[in-house]
Length: 285
Image (tube, rainbow, N blue to C red):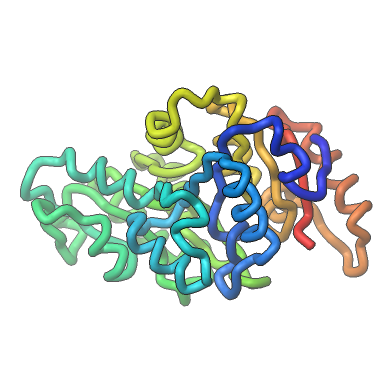
């Protein structure tokens, strides 16, 4: 992995840029102005720019959220794909009248559940579970274990509309659907995931961006597990935004006062031991 100060330093090597949203364009509390500057500079250079998010919402909903952070659609060529969109496409393949038990907000339900699908309030009435997101107040990783055990006994498949395990809202950890989907899978349940690092969302963008070659695309994200591994599977280069999330994923303890140069050494050493290595690394200013 090569540490750089900005993707603009290597812009001559790439024709397309895939940006993650949460943790890159914003942290749930404010936009990262530095990254918005990259978007504008790359747009001026006529680069192809797209966003891929593990949000369980559909693109139009996410675009409204971005506008609330001052991130206009013109900044990213209006190209945005979400895990929620991929999950919705999948759910539309189910037969009309299929009964689902939904875990998530009403905004997520409106985005994900097709009109032909029937939402039920009891697991024993359901034919599948759609897990979009835990209640924001949930902090315990075992919170849904009773529900998952009951679903397992009923042999219900689970559709995960957000593979993220957790994100950082500012400096606070927030749990995501992927954590509980993984717990269900560990119990022996069947799970279908939609979003990064799984291939369908990248394949959809590739169809839109043809004929850009995979190696001429740079994926920029703050998650080693979803962004870096997803890019690697597709033959794309990757730029890891080093921060709270990747440190948590790599199991790196950071004593107070640790210098950025020392952090670089620790991250590089951990990554080199594993099978996946980001092409580039960067700390936001």
